[in-house]
Amino acid sequence: MSLRNPVSQSKGGQNSSRGFTLIELILVFVIMAVVISMALPAMNEFKKDRDLKTAAAITQQALNYARSLAVTTGRRTRLVPAADRTGEFTLDVEDNPLTDPGSFDQLNWPIGITGTLPENIRIKQIFYPVPEQELEDDLSSIQGEDSEFISEDEAMEDRQSALMFGPDGSARDTFIYLYIAGSGDDEIEPSEVPDEDVLTVAIVGVIGTSVIVPKYTEEIFEIYEPLESE
Image (cartoon, rainbow, N blue to C red):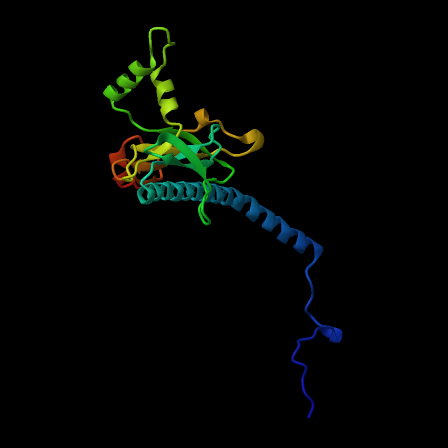
């Protein structure tokens, strides 16, 4: 008994299956290119959002470590941002609060914790509200008869050079604003960043706890408000 060939054949006994033609291959590549070009902006936005959230998590972890170090050692600790706001913090601890108060030594970050943010993330501003009377006292103490006038903004800038935690873990109400700066010729200046593109890491001063807020805010009570649905 003869067996039939299961493969269908055309006239002349040739296999009817064939490969792709050049036109079909070109069409497939064109479709792939269009799909990739459409997906690329979404992928870039996803990466930017991921980098910003990563930067916020790194900042919060550094803040929590500095606070816990202050509590366990009984000495003030501080995080000092890079002068150019490029997104790097150094960690300092008070040398001896009894014999040499106000003198700080820089420490290395422990394994698993870093003060360095992703390279495309910058610190737009570090802000904390200052009671009006306290600000007036500061201004009067640093302005003598022969001194130049120091504006409120300059006084704030001078005071925000470090984030300080006391031995009880407390700090000032503080707002650290992070944004995506880009790189090279496309890098964005802080003044050009709209508030809606800023992510806030807030420190609730009385307890020293840090909270990530996916929006711009200058009020501590706002960090607990539910976000409006888009």
